[in-house]
Length: 194
Image (cartoon, rainbow, N blue to C red):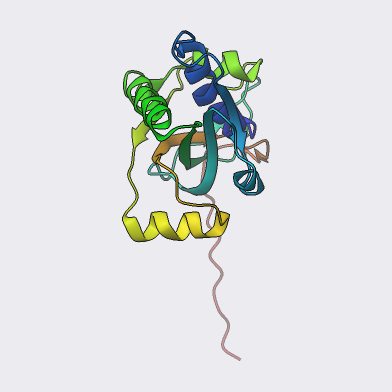
């Protein structure tokens, strides 16, 4: 399982995947950035902004404890779902729509982010070889989307929403292990009425 840097590693991998596969001939000035809410006030001239707007509890519950290299046991990992808003920015609405369409298609072509990709953009081995993250296009209803954009205060932009599912974060808290019980000794005492 990954450590606490799994959230940023996942965000960087999504953005890196898009930047690497971007057709430079068509979008030669495109920038790719992770956004904070305040950045929506002064957006990119052209490019893709990825904003992590919500983290929810993942679908996998009651995962087993993870064994360590020296047979120690750690608390079970927590799984998270990461909710993203992907927004395309351009000088014209036509180019903005082209950029958004291309980004949606590119992410649909890679619905599972393998550990090699996740670790490449994290510049470390955050994810183990048997881990991956599922990326799902998850459109918001109009009311939820409008509420989200109301927070940013600019005009509503063309965007897509995604969820990165089952990002597991390991614990570093060791669980005490006790030897298994071998025998049970029962002592019976006669109660004296007095």
